[in-house]
Every structure is written in C-alpha cells, then in structure tokens.
Amino acid sequence: MAKEKDLKIEHSYFNKFQFMAIRQYKKALMFKDDIQKIRNKGVNITDEDAFAIAKMNAEIEICGVQVIIFCTLALESFINHYASRRLSKAYLDKYLDQLDHATKWIVIPRIATGKQLNPGSTAVKNLHALIVTRDRLLQCKVKQKFTDRFSCVDYSWIEDAEFAIATVADLVAELARIDDCVKPGWATKPNPSA
Image 1 (tube, rainbow, N blue to C red):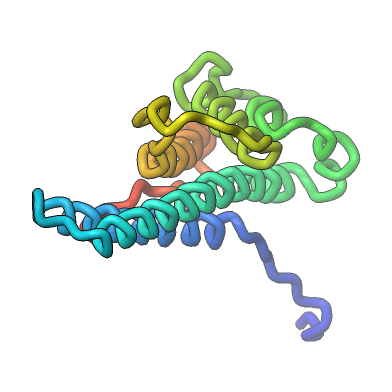
Image 2 (tube, rainbow, N blue to C red):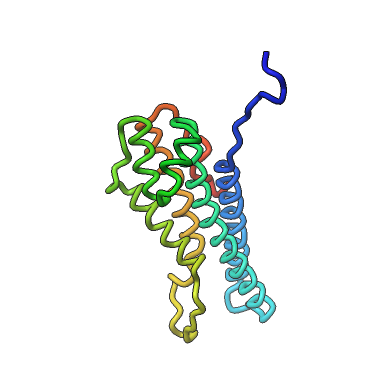
C-alpha cells in the first residue's frame, strides 16, 4: 500500500474555468432581462432608469469579457491536461508546451490517437476566432468614436459570450468523437433559463 505522501491526485482548472464562464454568462442574461423590463416601460423611462440601463450594460460588458477569457483558459487548460494524461507531463513540457494554443488542438490528438481534428472544421475555425477575440481584448488600445457611430457590434457581449461557450462545447465534443477517453460533459452549453 502506498504511503499517503506517495499518492498522486489530478488537479486541473479547465472545468472550473468553464463553470466561471457559464456563471458570468448567466449573470449577463439576468442584466439583459432587467434592462428589458425597464425598456418595457416605453416612454415612461426616467433619467434614473437610463442610468440603471447604462450601469447594467457596463456589467454585461464585464461579464462578456470574463466569459471570453475564462473560455480560452478552459480550452488551453484542457488541451494541456489531455496531453499530460494521454502522453505525459514530461513529453508535454519538452515538446509541446511551446506550441501555440490552436496548434496544440491539432497536434496533440494526432500524437495521442493517430487521428486529428480537421483544421478546416467549424470548431477549429471558431477556436481561432475566439483566440483573436481574446487577444484583441488583452491587447486593447483606447478607441474614440463619435456616439452616432456606435453599432450593435459594439455591444455584442452576450453574443460573444454565447460564441465562446459554444466554441468550448463544440471543440471538446469534436475531440471526444476521435478519442473515447475524452468525456465532454464538463463543456456543455448552458441552459439560459437554468
């Protein structure tokens, strides 16, 4: 029997990152619902209501940024976890760790199973798009726009959050299709009403 100090446990954050992303997404949806309740007043919106809407829109933006960051963290953490389990931590550290995030999703399954994700698949293309979005947020430069030039795209945080969460679910599901060892249950798309 192994001594207590000799026992090893697996520890990874991918599922925790995804949990945090989904929690923030649901929080953004609650703010969206609250905004809609105020807007349903129609012409009776007060200055106080307008201020509350602006404040909630700012909260939705914060939630959206957090979802995007947590989803990319979940994906990177998961592919590293997958590599260390299917190959080895030493192999990951020595040969694969220097690869960029998206390349790991192609190379690691190919080494582990002899099969690879299709680089032209929607899931892999969405991974690239998610990484670009994350990088754009992390390397953000100050923008100035005239207020009459803002568009819906400037406030698409909930859609961006949904895209990020779907990307995680779709990419993990695609990996599970080529490797039975992958259990995609942690990466499901949330039920917004739950």
